[in-house]
Image 1: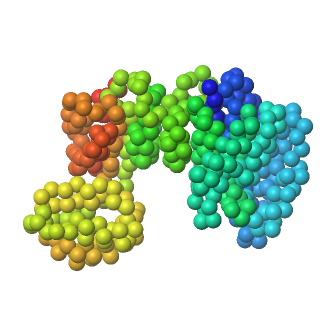
Image 2: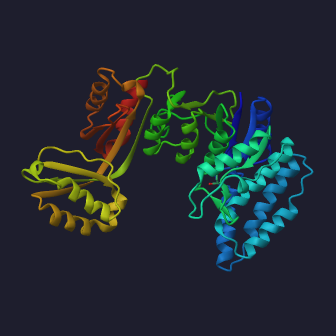
Image 3: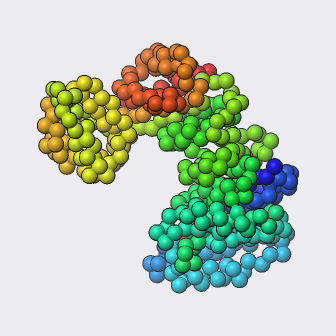
Length: 436
Ligand code: ASP
């Protein structure tokens, strides 16, 4: 058994958290590759190290003094090192970073240093080697991640490296400069190391005991999700339920490596297991419920629309020209709606409307800005008679009007359009029906 473990910022916020991580690592000999984030917030009003570094970088670019912010970075690492009782002296490294910042180094380098220093501290504390991701997680010149080159180089070095600590979040460009993933990207680094090391499991340690079946701000104490498939996770994440960077699943999914979301502050909790085809299910029909407001539906009516070749294409071309994402396209015989994110439509609404009238010569075009999309996700719905009936029955009993219904062809999810103000009551009604 071989495991790659990744610890997020809240798991490394101070020396006590570093100790918890080390205890978790030492408690299981198969946890051999460790990927770390930069120290996160210690309390709600604290500032993440990565944010402080970006702040220093932005100030330097504008010729402003950033010494107060950098002092906070320096103090945080020095305190962690001191409290862990390490002999490590980071002064020269910190001086070097400060000097680079003064010389207006780029944002990627600045942001990456939080993870770099974090990995130095963790490597010293575990007394394990540090592998700098700059040399092994490879990006192309255009900044896109080069999965094949990375896999080749990283898996080669790992053959002779029984254990190691890696800084998350960044890698290197062909010209040697540091390049970062998007925010929260250490999750991706962890998945890359898990794949390159052919780990049996990728443990992602954070500050919650896995995913919940719905948003705890809407339903009190929702049931935790013990097992979920990658496909289900993707559906829920798209609607805003998230504990993992969305790009992090691709490297492990391709390699068939399960991901276990675990809580550093409650290491005995089993967390959520994410895998391709979970066998041991919880026996529930529904895995999770999520939803988001802020959608607009554009309803286009025209007599004999169904006989007009290319009608839908012309509608979609107008939206594509304005770079607007189309979420759903419910259609009737002489009616077609497109559902789009309201914030994307708002700035170019008049132009889009004018072009739609011109391109379609419709009888009417109506806009409804007050739309929410609700997604009910569950592999258990597949081939299960009556599952959809229960969903709509529960919404009907709660007095919620359904504007749109869309079911993915894999029967994995039901997407339901409702009025924005009905979103929270709808989530509660469905939770009650399936989990209550
Ligand atoms: N430290 C980076 C961030 O705050 C990356 C990460 O934590 O995953 O976004």
